[in-house]
Figure (cartoon, one colour):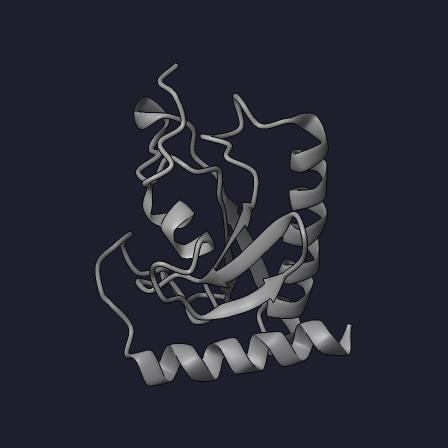
Length: 142
């Protein structure tokens, strides 16, 4: 497996070199909105550790990120009045991975509403800012 690239886009977001719409952060995990969401509230959760994907992440970092994925999924379900939640996680190019920093997609879903195709439409910054505010409030409420 190739080595972790510290210049991937998510590593740059973690270092503050690129902007994002942050919804959650602790000492080991970070969550922010996808700028090309497949549905309103589409959020990415990543470890702060330099893990390429599920195949090389330390077990304790994976366990922590999984807890944050659940926490964010519950908040997104509430904040976006979703009927369900889709989780996606890809590993290596053959598995569909595009950004080589471990990440989980949390996509709130409405019954009968199809997801947009991946990376198909960039959302307006003001819409993302409102979605981030809404999700962060739901996270703070517990």
